[in-house]
Length: 346
Image 1 (cartoon, rainbow, N blue to C red):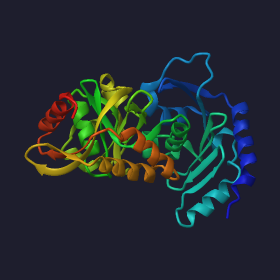
Image 2: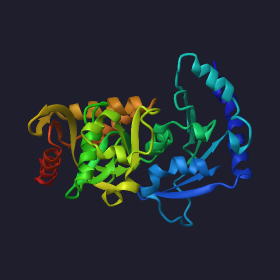
Image 3: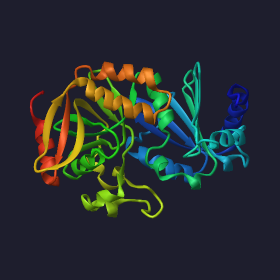
Image 4: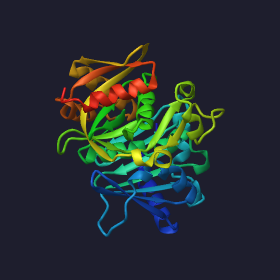
């Protein structure tokens, strides 16, 4: 069994050494009106991990950032993170995610991506480490630093959820549900039809001034079999169908004018691919939306359970929930969703 408390001082010293030894490449984001600064130890890390955030980039100012993230791999100091061998060997036995939560310190090692994430919520500093930047899996490039973003949202009164979101007529729909139900299909159809785009896989919810959806990533992930319905995705994808389970691309590079950073939330939609002639909406109990969002979000952000559920319940308590049964015609789906979001409050 790994005693993480004994490794923590050495790990923090390692990251401090990186900050001192490396000419860090810094980029600044504006997220929910707060400055988030990211510092990368190499150009390849910056290239692989910043594209998903590019639409949120802002001019750096003199203010102290609300969150400061340091990103590095083994090449930064030409030696492994302290305890790396123990972490990887212990986790590899049964592909088990390793977590540590004590006070203001949260850490997670994911054996699939081989990424180690650490945050100190008291200082507003986070660290993201992987062995080799060149080996980064496609899903980390599409939605990087998910756990760090999740922890930062928790400490900031926000919640990161596993959902897509698009907007029309200055209001947003949150598209929730498990994989394969049509979230990405609907989001991509909407983006290609002039909707505002807030996110495909993860977005942030805020209730500081009424329920609202905030964009986190500008990427779109899709199943390769979706190309039959959305052939344009094949020319947009930036990865290889022979090596990666899903395709992805960046909306900032393909549909920049469609990107939105924040929109008020009008409804939660649970898409369902039913191959019927027309797209329909059926009102559901509010609990269905909460359970759908909570189940997939808690699964995607391990260790988030109780606090995420409570925050979601507070934000969504007055938000209507509908099943959106998708028709077979792409243009009809987009038009029906436009009409839904343009109509008076449900």
